[in-house]
Length: 147
Image (cartoon, rainbow, N blue to C red; front, top):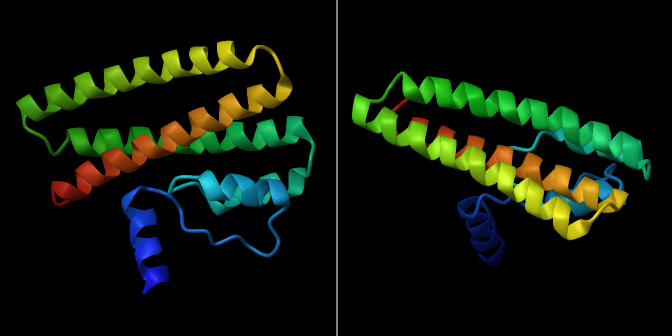
């Protein structure tokens, strides 16, 4: 029962259940614990293969961010085709606000951490997670429209 409640809570909060793969590196396991639902297994595999090489981990994050951005854009496009004019205007405003929020979040996170390479990875990962979470939101809206 407790496991079921934890899974329901994790899904409700948009957090991937802790399903660490036995081949995950400690870094991939740590990232997986905080990752929202929707982050790809290819990303965790990439991070595991990268080991402690921060440049390779950055490449993994960049690749996943591109995938999440494509997912977000696909969901946004599909959603917009199923909305009336008033809803489209609301979603468009919300997306513009989200883009501004994301840009300001990246700047703040970067400023707070100064120039450390570890912080740069944290900022990149946080942004990739935001892209994934926003794609989740738009896919939920699309599902709510019956599509």
